Image (cartoon, rainbow, N blue to C red; front, side, top):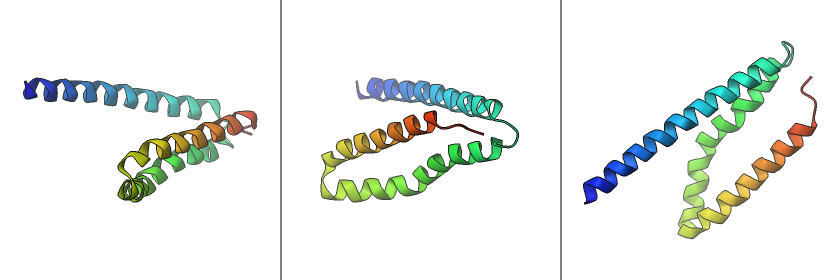
Length: 97
C-alpha cells in the first residue's frame, strides 16, 4: 500500500517537473525572441535574477519562518506570491526598450 503511494508521488513529481521545465524553457525563449537586440541582455538578466536569487535566499527564509511556526510558511508563500504578481503587473505596464 505504501509503495503505491510512493510510486504515485514519483510519477506526479516527474510530470510536474517535466511540465514546469517545458514552460520555463518556452517562457525564456519567448522573452529572448520578443526583446530587441539592445534590450535582450537586460531583459534576460531581470528574468534570471529572481530565479537565481530565490535558490539562494529561499531556503534560508523558509527555515527562519518554519522555526517560528510550521504553518507560517503558507501565509509567507502567499505574501511572496502577491509581491511577485504585483511586480509582474508593474513590469507589464513598462516598455522594454
